[in-house]
Length: 170
Image (tube, rainbow, N blue to C red; front, top):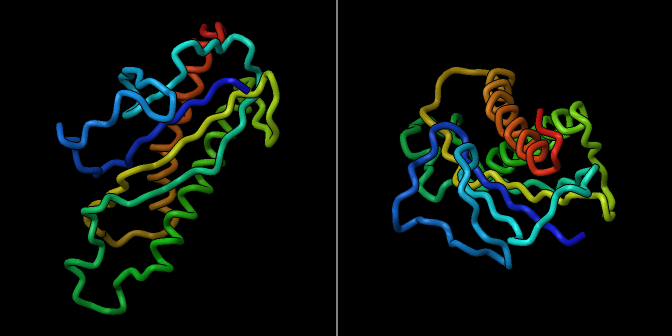
């Protein structure tokens, strides 16, 4: 497998990127490519997508924004988030990410596999700088639904990019 792609993004409510936070032009041999739909997209300059028929999703990384302080305004100790709560948010979001991306890709002709191969495109994706906005009375179901909406958009962007890169675009 001679190709890798790194996609990162942040959910709604993320802090804007400033000039000081500008991502590098190159990362581990990959070159940053401008995209109107994805925050940061990197690819090998000589990458040819035409032979890829299947996709392998690397484990999804989820990291909170360094400025997100979920307990800063919370006075009630019983409503504060502890480390296990934060890890649960990361794990749940990563699992939902994998589920949504797998559905989008599989339903549109890109089987998701767990092995490498000449026709397997390896995708590494991450949610970086996750900043969850003001807390409201919600349920885990409504929170997950909101996340699923954002993830579905990202999955469609990836799939449409694959369609264009592999010549399947309609």
